[in-house]
Length: 230
Image (cartoon, rainbow, N blue to C red; front, side):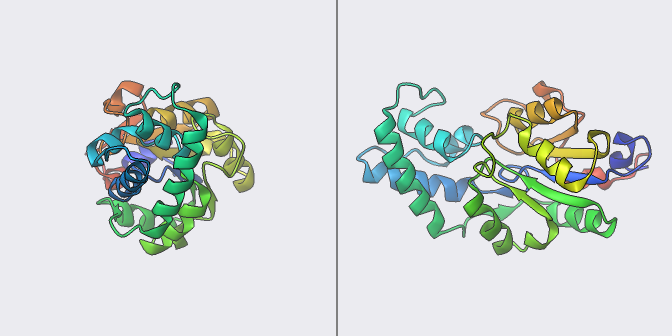
């Protein structure tokens, strides 16, 4: 029996929802490039990929504020400066996604899930305007029936609203849904929605091991979901 079936008592889920950045694609190189361009325009030093990697996961507004603060804590950042920086960042990030790459095992897993006629959705805190173009550019756009971005609804993860919204659209109860992500926000949102959560180890969780959040299981490669247990 595969790990996916074990999670659902021998059955397959009817709906699988995915986070995007850090789960399906490594987008940090492009995000960092846009952040660094923004900081340089504002007369601040570039942040670099490794620092940006620890800052992503809470949407563009928070990412920009963290970049201005130079760390995770950003309450002291001037709001007008943050608005200016966000506008610059959105312009720079829209220009190029050439450095973004799909993680190993993702295409295989999405293809298999589609063959089983399981409904698929994206639930991300990335602004919605960037999501479909990024997916299409990576050849992933055709897999997902629903796309929920960080500004699609008034709430974003860790609030469960987006997961609950997709389940309503799909007509699927929480017992038959799975959410796959890489961060504490994802695990907390899934738990609040009553949805089983699987987490990947390779994503962005502000420098902390995702296993600390106690998801149902932790994967090093998404294709491990399909592996038959011995």
